[in-house]
Image (cartoon, rainbow, N blue to C red):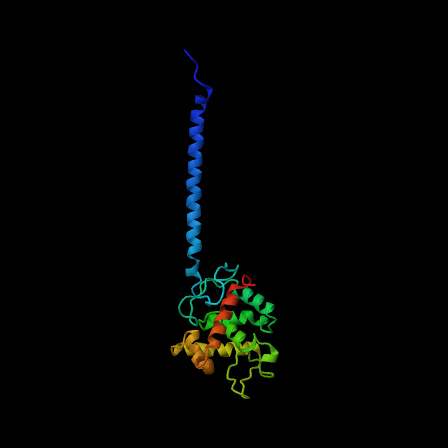
Length: 215
């Protein structure tokens, strides 16, 4: 009887390798499809980011998902790290408010405010409390009660954060609970002109929460 060619003995091995390769190909295709869906869904995650900013970035170690809906009243479950992130951001800005990071978080939680709101208003009003941007000896980085030559003065930045936080909580009790609505009470000229106050506050909210990825 003639002997079978040697290559026929390799048949089972070739079939086995083909099956393994096919399985690996299917797994790779599924993984790639899954990652593509996650990337495509990022637009939903970033829906509150200001429209003029890049949307393709990852959130930092401490940052939370940007708040949806109301901007003043916001339930925040993850609190750990917010003061560290805020302090790092304010230090990067060269702000004298950097030592008040924990105060910002405490007041925000006390009055159920978004933790980004108060520091962002300070950013818009005085470049985060820069001494050449606030009334002399006022400790008022928020422009709170500042009209022309008139200005509300506080004994410390801590008192300013506590007072303005309470004031914003009172706004919310009267139904003024978004940056868009607050603008009409806080900075009427901007509301009637170009909304630069609203846009500036929203920008800083995004920038603080994104820190340090946006740099």
